[in-house]
Structures are given as structure tokens and as C-alpha cells.
Amino acid sequence: MENMDKGAADQEVQKIIGELRQHIEEEVCNCTPEVLKLLGDIYAYDERFTMKLDQYRCGFALFLREAIQVYCDNLEE
Image (cartoon, rainbow, N blue to C red; front, side, top):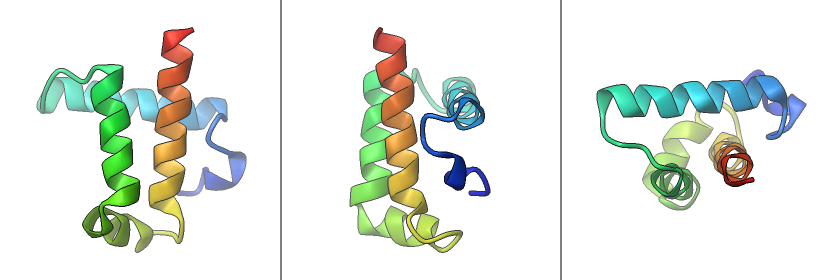
């Protein structure tokens, strides 16, 4: 949340998204880029998730979706 002002493509933000993916891989399921993108969509477009995440900071859910998209796009390059 404190990194939102840096932008979704910021190196530190991208590192955190990579750590999120690794955590999901280790604790939940195989987290392909497609799965991670879907998770970002859920954060941003499912109001239950959006309301919970935006409690931390307004716009946080959409920011996460954008940062995840950047991360996945970079993997595909």
C-alpha cells in the first residue's frame, strides 16, 4: 500500500508481486501467469474482494490488478 505512489511498474512493487506469486505457489496452487491475472481481476472486479482490499487504501484493489498485469506481461516478454 505504501508503494502505490511509486506506480505499478516500480521495481519494488514488481518484487512484491513476485513474492505474492511465490507464496501462492507454495501454499495454494500452481500459479501460472494466467491464474495470477485472474486473481488480479477478482481483486478488482469482485466487490467482496475490492471492498476488503480498499479498506487498506482507496484504489488498492485496482492497483494490485494493474501491478499483477505488468508483472505477467514482463514474464511473457
